[in-house]
Amino acid sequence: MKKYLIFTLLIVGCLNGFSQKIEGLALTPPMGWNSWNTFATNIDEDLIKGIADAMVESGLRDAGYVYLVLDDGWMAMERDAQGRLYGDPKKFPSGMEALGEYIHSKGLKFGIYNCAGSKTCGGYPGSRGHEYMDAQSYADWGVDFLKYDWCNTENLNAKGAYQTMRDALYATGRPIVFSICEWGDNKPWEWGTEMGHLWRVSGDIVNCWDCEYGHGSWSSWGLWKVINMRKDIRKYAGPGHWNDLDMMELGNEFTDAENRSHLAMWSMLASPLIMGNDIRTMSEETRITLTNKEVVAVSQDALGIQGFRFLNENNIEIWIKPLANDEWAIVFVNMNDEPVELNFNWQKHDMGDDLNQKFAHLDRTTYQLRDLYNHKDLGNTSVPLRAKIDVHDVLMLRLKK
Image (cartoon, rainbow, N blue to C red; front, side):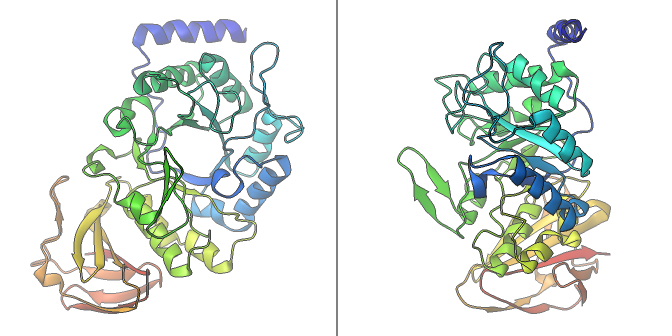
């Protein structure tokens, strides 16, 4: 019966070109955890179940982090006799469907990884030539999220390759968030909206403030290298389609101040909030940062507008983001190597977003100020804002009328 259903869906898909997305997915930037940053391909059933447990016990799930994504290394090194993928039996002896059931039992969503090429970046079987078979396997296992990488693609057309997997996912009839991990080489922001729900804008992130680590033909990028890499792409972001700045390195050897800046910037830029640290052993301060619902609310704002750099004054970067209900988020980031004293006169700045025709009109509108990390009110915009900001730390405010 399943074969006839798949065949029918394929015929319908061919007739309509799969032009319509499954509605209601990723209307705000997806939130969750991915295994790659900390564990690379060294993942197994016990680890993933432990992460699922920790997501619940730490309060991360209730803060909105619901996608648990297995990155590269979950599958056996060869397909079975019918050409199907299956979980490495040593790493995942209970099988992928049972793992998905465990993840779902925790109130979480099940994410998985593959690649558009013949092999994944770690050398495991890729999906090239097996897209419809693999998509149906994911649906059968209860997968809710697919990260689709770009290694070993041998001159494939990027847009076409992602369209093939998009169509394969739609053919299953299961709502699966599709994460395009093409690294920004073929400008996926220009075509990604019709193919998936989020697209990487850079190569892999690494846990440093502002650095580049070369690996021959490719590089790993520090936090601010990723932030500054692409220009004029914020217009492509919105509900259901997001610029993805990569998994967060928050909790991976950053200072507590840098962790706060990391979450603040990913929230301001409407990037998916996908954790990459070992949440089973994270510090209490890291847990408090990640579960800060006032900061996360900026990420999850219903307007879905990506923020932007408004000013840079004395190496204090000032970023703004329009929010629903005529509210605003503003972030002051201390890029200096020493603490700074902020003195910001609201009346001297014409704060607005020309792209989205949103304007604060600070000359005639007074906003109340809410400090999102310290959970306290800071007066209003009728008087200059004075505050001390530590090295690489952030002052993040919400402006309400």
